Amino acid sequence: GSFDQLGSSDFSLQDFDFPDATVDWDGSLECERRDFTNAEASASVVLAMDQSGSINDTDPGDLRIIGALEFLQSLSPPTDLSLFSFASGNPCSEFDVTRWGDGFTTDYSSYAGVIESFEGCEDGGTPLFDAFAGAINYLSTDGTQPGRAVVAFSDGADTASSASQGEVRSAASAAGVWLFNLGLGEGVDTQVLFQLSRATDGVYFQANDVDQMVSAFRGIYTIVTGSFSVY
Image (cartoon, rainbow, N blue to C red; front, top):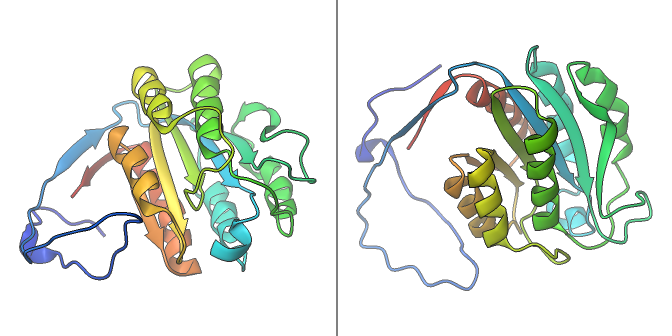
């Protein structure tokens, strides 16, 4: 279902953790609503999967793979999809940032086997910002639909990029690309992922179990192909 006209009384703040930050809070909440519309109701989407070694700790059950496969099933033309994975020094891939397949396609199931092969292939460093930079550039040059988005699963801890967070934000804003980030369970650098999403009019999702992960992946398709509000 959907909700409208929410206010601060409809929200509560529970446990949260921003690394290396001190938060002073007086117990009050302010509610800001932002409305977005993709008038063309279609998008080119890059699904970017973190395959670095730290994923063994943040997603030991490979729940992101279940969510990604569900995401494939939620898509419909004319929205098209490309698949990226990223990890530095990973023996399962030749490059730090790898683009799979032959480009954007509406044959979403063609990526299912690749996504399933990611299970057990988590190793190496995390070139998160390089992955975003590559995906943004690819959307800029090869994206076919009016809406353009990167949907990324990562723990947010970049350890191996030449690009910076600021460069990613600038490139995404210049290209009109939304960054949607998904974090699973504990150990996620929520601050980085939230900041990237917020700065590009995307959304950050935090999931604590497979049901929330699947729901987040499905919800993203609705967001990038229609109208939505963020509080």
